[in-house]
Length: 417
Image 1 (cartoon, rainbow, N blue to C red):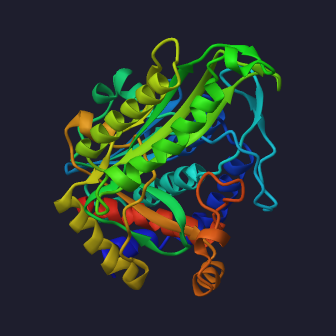
Image 2 (cartoon, rainbow, N blue to C red):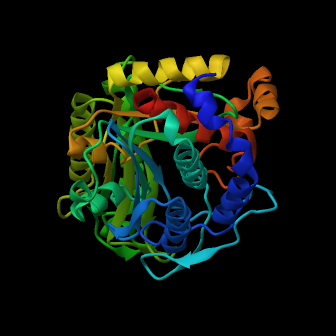
């Protein structure tokens, strides 16, 4: 029996407790920077294993250190935050939680991205490693990170002295549940998740009565022209072989049907795999917006603000090959090729700041029969809820088993005797 199989042989002993822990997290999600109860529950689990646990790093971040003699240091990371989404998954443990957002408004909250899967998988993986010290040597750093969704949780932990609180890792590992068949997983070397930037643009007009449009510079019409023209950037300015996404997610203007407003606010999101393409998108956006403002006789230039910037996630080649080989040995055909994902993450901020290689992979969370039926009908995009959808709720099993096993197998690729 392999070292990984030996360590994982005790998974059945904690499966029921892990599943209930997951259901509790799912019922009680918390928004970014407010993961107080989630952090407390995860810290309690780790303290119960005898780990050296430090909480409150970067606000609500938690680090637990499991030492087992000399050897490599492996960092395992899970994010904890949820989203302002009304859950419509239909599961009997669905969230009905609400919270106040940064503007003081009451909003629904749900784990519509699967971070509860990540937390439950991490604490169980650490427990399995703690129960089998004879099988490995080294140190495991369990890191529970807040505020991934706002792109500043990793940076917050670093700013709060994370590098001085943990031994320097030899490798950092993380995973994400995706809209793929449950029980499957995949890793790829090189770029895996895009860099992402959100841009807020304020365009200016001249207000007037709706009955006298000739006296106005209508920012609503201006915004409409900008949105349409922006769609040509990816289709006409970026090479077909290069990946880029540009989404206008929000337009806000006006208060009344017969009042032409003074201004409009657009919020854009861009996703790229290279700095060259990112720079090209920024330049094209500014060129188009500025030109449309001139064409509409806008009384003053547009204002730009970049926020919620996520780094590129690009896996280390050698480390990815090591993880892929370990996955193939343990999971067999469950380990499948995985495409680049246009989602984004701030995980890489941590290993980049610490100067260590990292590997980030995906696990499936959709019922395999449901996925196969949608795939056979050519309706995966239409019938399978993706991350951030109100209907997204990974099936508990085999998702938790896969996430737990993946963390153990990957960690042991460095730690096994």
